[in-house]
Image 1 (cartoon, rainbow, N blue to C red):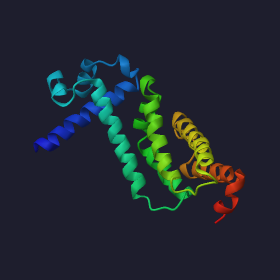
Image 2: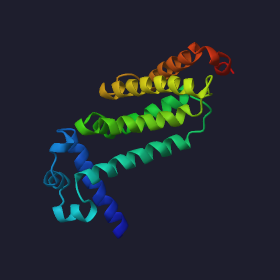
Image 3: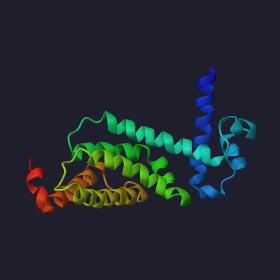
Image 4: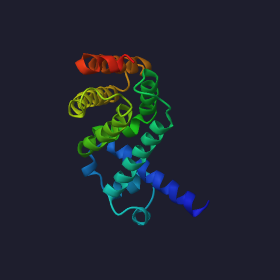
Length: 190
C-alpha cells in the first residue's frame, strides 16, 4: 500500500472513531486516548496526523463541507426546484451520521448548521432578486433559516419523511413565501 493510501486509511480510521464516539458523548469530553482505542491505533500515529481532537474534528467538518459543495456544484439547475431539493435531501440522508453527529453534538451545532446555511445560500443565489437588495436579504434570511430548521428537524427525527415529500413541502413553502412578497410576484411566475 502506498504512503498516500496508508495515510488516507489511517485518517479515515481516526475520523470514524471520533464520529462514533461523538454519538455517545459530547466532543469536549472525548480524549485522544479514547479516539486511539476506538480506531485501534496508537497515540504516536494520531500525532503524526493531528495535533489534537479539534484538528481531527475540523478535518471531518472540512471534508463534509467539500462533499456538500461538490454535490451542489454537480447539480445543473435554474432556481430552486423540488427535484434538486430531493437530490440534496438524499445526499444529506446518505451522509446522515456525519450531519447528525456534527449538528447535534454539544459544541458543534453551529458548525453543522453553517454547512447547511452555506449550501442553502448557494441554492438561493439562483433565485431572482425580489425588489431591492436590502429587502431581498431579509426574505432570503427568513427562507434559509426556515429551511435549515426543517432540515435539522428531519435529521433529528431520523429522516422520518421521504426525501421527495419533504422536498415538495420545502419548495412549496419557499415558493409561497416568495409569492407573498408583493414586488416579486411577477418575477416568480416567470
